[in-house]
Image: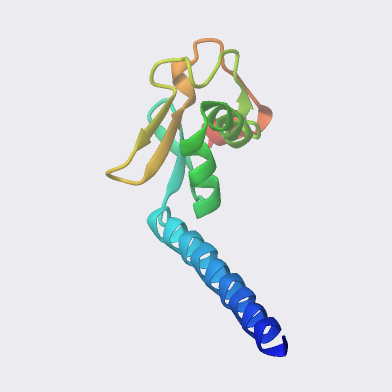
Length: 124
């Protein structure tokens, strides 16, 4: 009886350890594949912002267009207010796999309302 309990316990421990290793390995592979991405915010052809993006955020943005819209609005918010859907407006948000960039061009929104921060940058 004790021999059976010991074998069962060892089998359960091995199963837990293998499962943890698979989960950890999968996360590491996804993070490795999604590293090195940047978001670039442009206005009138000029790059206002170039910021690295975490691998987890890249995975979320690639997974769902709603997350992409929220991410784009979050990046744009210090510089102004969009009057359109960033995902549905052609050319506003472009994802480039080759350069690993998400480029947001706010000049594609004709009704874009710049903030005071952006107006000060343009005056410089």
